[in-house]
Length: 216
Image (tube, rainbow, N blue to C red; front, top):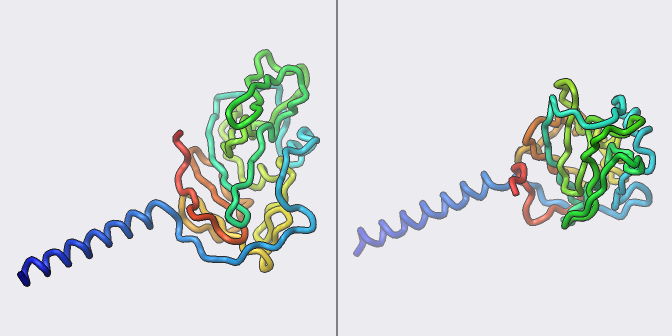
C-alpha cells in the first residue's frame, strides 16, 4: 500500500510539473497590472490615418505603385488595452482611395491591395496591412527589414519606450513581448522579421497573450 501511495503521489507531482512547463512555454509570463486610466487624447480606437502617403514618407519610405514580392515577409501585431484587443486596421500604408487599389470584403471587414495593374501614381508603402488581422506585410523590391516604429508612424500612433498612443508609463503599465519573451528595449526598434509575433499589453493584461505567429 505504501509503495503504491508513493508511486501515485510521484505520478501526480510529475503531471503537475508537465502541465506547468507546457503552460509556461505556451504563454508569456505577464506581470499583473492595474487598469490603464482613460486617455484624454490618443486613446483607442486607432483608425487608419486619412493621410497615408504623408505617413509613408514620414516613416522613411518612398511610396510605390504596386506590391513587389522580391522580399516578402509577415510579422504579426497584437495590442491589448485593459485586457481587450485593439484592432490593427486594414489599409495602413495604402492610399485606399486610389482606383487601382482593389477593395474586397472578408469576415473581418474590408481588405485592400491586389494592385494589378499598378496605380498611375504611387499609392502604397512597402510596409502595410491588407486586412484588419494584425498581419504586417513587407512587400518590397529589395531585402530591407523594417521596424515596428516605422509601422506605428504609418499608423499615426505614438510609440516610444514610455508611451503607446496616449497611454504612458508610469500611469499606464506597458508590457511588450516578442515571440513570447518580454522585451525591455524601445519597442520602436523591433525588427519586423518573418513570422515574428509582437504583443503590446497596456494596463491590465488579457487572460492569454499570444506568443506565436498565427497559423490559421
